[in-house]
Length: 414
Image (cartoon, rainbow, N blue to C red; front, top):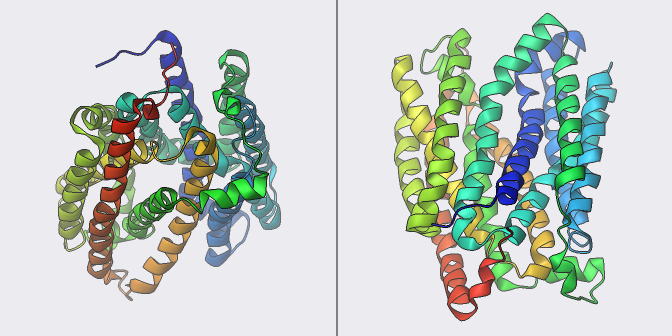
């Protein structure tokens, strides 16, 4: 297995840290819910709109950016959107009213929602396909790290200072990350050598005219849908159905996150070793079994809950890592930015839709129990199985492209 150069290690590290700040900004809002409801005097429906405002504005921004994504140096594009994200985060820190905070989250989503897709385009440009599983595994640990740090750090700062403090910290750290990117990241413009006369609108529409791209869009959309369905009511199910005290929830998140941080890089390496689609099938199979067990549990000891959560979350991560690495080989170099932007947008939008659908399936009984969570689990299990089938033709197409043109894996940077 090839080793990374010092510069490649730097690129992976900076993208992982960048992804950490983006995900942490999104994750931090959830544990602040009770405080925001009290301090801003808002209703639960208004808080829900604050949360969803980020996702929908991010989805809209990604679609709007898709036509332009391959027209610029990816470093410059990254810095532009990251600067807007930092601005939005500081606006959240300065918010003193519901309307101000809602507008700040829209700004943050408009810029922050595109950054992940630019990062994946950079990975695809700079790393060959045979090592992308490792890279995706390392970068995706940002999600697990944010889960470990987001809830305890957010609550600690907000309890000692105010709910503004976490956003001040995220904005400050992001400024430092942006400086490092501006100074040390090299220009990423090889895709500009592939000349294209398509205007942004035609470039955007072209992405929806390629059959392989449409297959990738559909598969990744359903991939996000299955994952987001269980999340909104996960904590309530854990407390009211599994009988875990709400004070012990942070411990479950902490253990799950730490296990995922360790598992992410290992699963990425395994994905490169045994094949992306094989890894995706294994992760999907484990996910189906664990979802079926977890969603039908009654009162359960916390040790068992932590074990099942750790395995399930690791299985979900293996699906995301392997799917991201596999679908990264779908777009042509000249279309990578547009493809990644559209994929990111569809994931954001499908996540919002999935959360809404989940709310229609389950309901909270008078005693607090979440009813029909088992039905929700069966829907997720079907979505996982269908995604495995949808990924198969993508796997065959990528394998055929590599056999016909080995350079499809991408160029590595030393």
